[in-house]
Image (cartoon, rainbow over all chains, first blue to last red; front, side, top):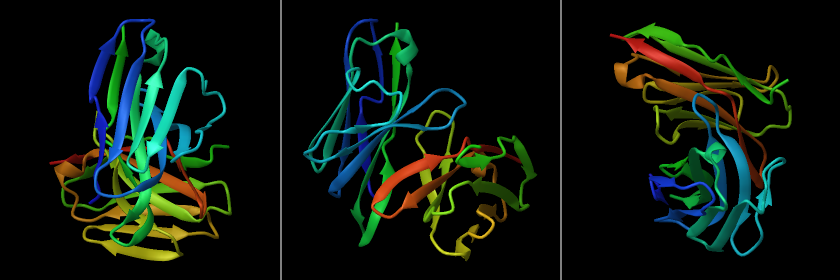
Length: 118
Length: 112
């Protein structure tokens, strides 16, 4: 299957600092990437949708100035958590949509990134 | 009413039996339906997708869709301990807007 890679897999940062998470589609061009957050024992909550070359569309209740999303190319999107606080500690997952194996609009998930803010 | 509803479980099934997972959705215009498997601490993995009414089989997995009843299910035959995971139902409302809306997931445990 298609590969979507996230980096780092886990990160610990101090409160008040910023953390950047990368999401790459390794073997297909992702016209759209999605960023999710998942707290323990809860489902995935969509944070924002990003299309290559344009501004991200944020879901209601997600602070766009806190969670900066950049989708500079068809294979890379980044999520930067600015001025992180302990309540931002969560599992962040990206997914990418593209044409994979001739099947349009298939969505694949990255491995996820665990963020712990101390 | 939640957009996508699942019984959170846990659902316990003996090894070798059939596990049946259910999901209902609220928006009639929903077009695409997916089942993901998520192991603890890991990212979701796509198991099945289904777009039209009826059954779709892939190995030990069968997805069933009934748009009139707004119901989608996943059957796992010959359940294995490795099938123990949380199963997430996800729905896309319309083509061109591929936002997945997830249910809360059903935790499945296969008992050896």
